[in-house]
Image (cartoon, rainbow, N blue to C red; front, side, top):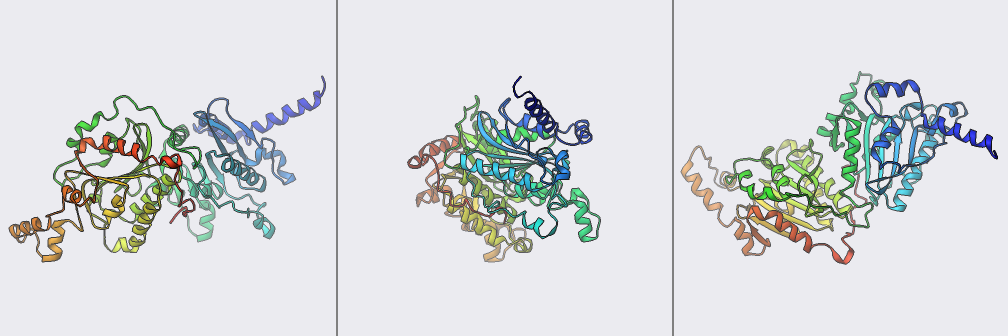
Length: 508
């Protein structure tokens, strides 16, 4: 047979590369029920759609070439629900997936292709940090510099999954991503606990350094933690279904599930008429949006504000809602951070914003000031004003002070439930501030003064001056939003916005 030796050599080289790295490490992963890099791609992508690039790449160091298949990273293209994506899967079985020059070239190739061709980028992260000795010395560290590798302008969606011990390179990619997921038990940090312990001369607990609770609840750098690799990968597929493949197209439309909107008739049973009573706004959201479509983001971080993607009538929307069940709905600096990053996501990928408001204002105090409350309030406001996607707001019960503006006071269309109340501050608080009277001390006088300060603060007072566009029955909220989404389609630009925040900082 012609080329017989070459055919055999090609098959052998291919088989060796596909086997990945350490057999012992592969066996350990399998025993623990954890997928390896190639299995993860099999679960993530449509069957048979993966086209690998860089299969035969190896370390540039001669002594490592025989033990570095793919140089520790599997890269290529595939499809999710028929739509093309670029993928990067770190192979922890090969030299701990440590960062090295050839692996970096593979990442840069996929990054450039996804930006140029308008495809989402998915990173499946798990790595031991930089590869020593490759990066040691002046030339070693200087070579890690790559022109504009950190210049991301949000042309396409980026998703990073943290699926094991992830230090260095996967952490940088997570910080640059639109969605970050984490398998419980994984760790994400700048450097490993071993390196950190040496640097600070103290023992460091990996979970405290970068475990899922710290990243989802304290820093907010991880959007969701999942139990298994499979759950993470399924979540990635679902998330990308809400977004366009690139910033110059509208989000995909979906079929409206049967039964959507039926819960609206029971909404008055969910929201108490008395404003001092709390409720969970997530129940309101679930009633309004298409059945089963709500996809919360950063649910464990800054819980006073609920953010997430959803669909109304098959259209993707971004929901921002104050949640009275937490801190009475009073917004804090972390809530502003959460809202701002979510506005940037939605505006970057042409997702209309829906703001649901029931808040007494901002949570003022020493702690908020130490965290830079004023700056975060203005960042949130700035982002909303720069957003060129449709913005719809619904005032549910109360909206006081500066929070009135932040929670949609400048939206394209504003509706208020007939239970809405808007003012500079809660009338009861105003009695204390203006008259110095406490309710317990003088209940009758307090109530008389409260009623006086509560005049002209209702939904119809807003509507009388055309400061809002409609007063609606709460049970009509879904219908009103659906109609307004149809009106504000940005037809002249095919539902594509101006993306004025494409270079907004990754973190702030």
